[in-house]
Image 1 (tube, rainbow, N blue to C red):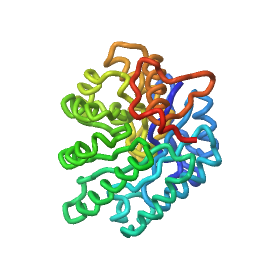
Image 2: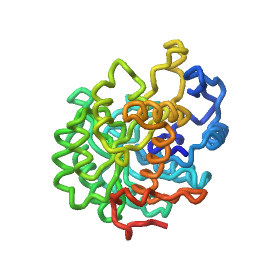
Image 3: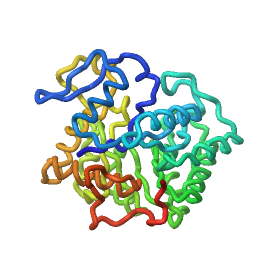
Length: 316
């Protein structure tokens, strides 16, 4: 039982046939001719129970809602605005839609859809050159989306990159109004992990853990973080693992997919001294609990794990 708590299946790179990463006993391999429909079918066959897809810009909100209606009970949408994707066309494969402050009304409209289970991805991202960061705009949209999540009593999916100081300052101001959520694509160390989990947030762990040359701090964070505060994710088609069986060109071409999740779970299991199956089960229950999504086949969130938002926030 696996859950991908962060993937972008509505991304245009999945619109036509594409190469993608799969996993065999020998390691990661490249499948040459995938389609979105066939990939989702394969993900279901290998035990992916459901996926959560956060929005990036206004257009992606519409695409995600349409895809969620095509795959009910498997794909759950989050509505939001990414901190940088709407400010520069260098991000992503398609030209970015320029966002206006009045477009927050349009975003609020998307959150009214009953299938929306979170606000995100939202946050702060300072990895671009300072002149391209638009920090004030990022902060305005981040604060507004935190307020929106509180009004809707929804958890948040956070994108924080090279901006922990400012992000934590804002999150601490909103701590009493947070309804749970996840710090997606977490790559920090043990101290930073304790800070985010101390705010009631889970940590999203994905392909970065399978990049041995750069994940030592992340490994320390996983060792000290309780399993009930970890989620599995891929951020597909991004954040690919190291793939020794593939050439550099093959890896660059490949889309990352939920099919790598067993390897992420196995590595977490090694670090925590437990079985991959236990990691898969508990992280799936964590996602169900945090985002109030029922697990099929009689599954349920762990009764021993504390809820990260109140029962009355359940959405139809």
